[in-house]
Length: 232
Image (cartoon, rainbow, N blue to C red; front, side, top):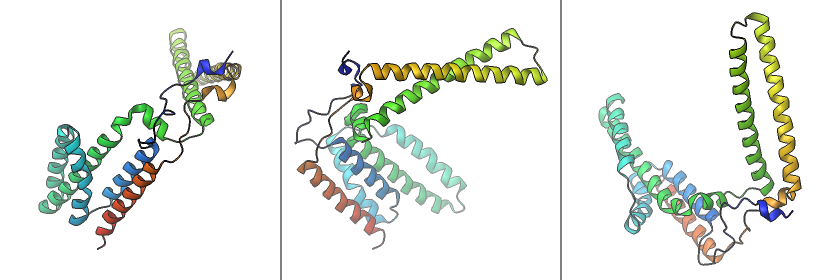
């Protein structure tokens, strides 16, 4: 049996051309920009940081109505609860600007990648990715069996009290652990029979392209200037 039959084909980024930016680079740039905006307080830094969201808004239609409704509620709360209403208003406006800039940037840069692109951007060892999936599956199975066993115990012995109740609960826990352990072993055997962890290859890692280098350099300078404006 071939391992390719049982692959985790979430997205295939092995055919991306050199004219497109790597999802990992896009994610890293967006996160670094968000961190820079989060630590910005001065007016020059916020004005400079708003250039990127403004460009994105000009190129793409991004709905910011819902998030601004939440910002309005937050702003009203800060005005009413801040020791000085004027200071609360200013602080609320700054937070609202930060939230809008980060939201627009993420929606413009990360949303087009989709789930597959974001998954590809998280550069993790293939074996670790598969182990996480199998672990989550094992936890779900254990929770399902434990809930079913407790329901059966309540229906069959609703009057249990004291030591007998503790013993019955211990038996239920031990039974669920043993059953889950056997299930985990069968899952591991199934992985081995299907080619091991090598059968779960999802994509081919891309090499760094000149476009990726240029984008990283541009964002590094942009973020450094934003952060520097806070201390100018």
